[in-house]
Image (cartoon, rainbow, N blue to C red; front, side, top):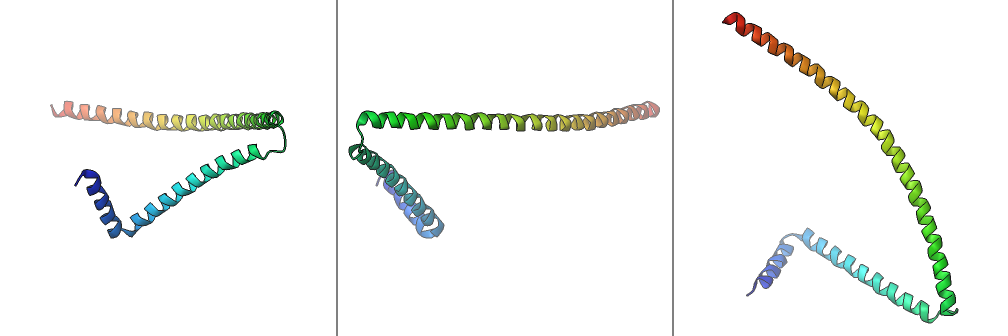
Length: 130
């Protein structure tokens, strides 16, 4: 018996012992089947569209190019809008973070002052004891 057979048998036994594993496996297989079906359907639909198109190939290519250019323009516009919105959000968060950093630094500095005072008190006590 080779490793692959052993692994398959172990996986089978695990699936019998854990019904959730079997359910997950079935969901994976279904999603893979769905993805394969969509890919094949898209391919066959594209081929059928080319063969049964009522217009000449040159006109179809021109129309397709025009539609792709429109889609490109829409995507570029959306990208620019998204980029500007994102930069506005980043700028607003920068101010917020700077304020938070200042607060943390202030707290840290005040803590350091107390630590320094405690160190000084400890040094004075050591001097008095000596």
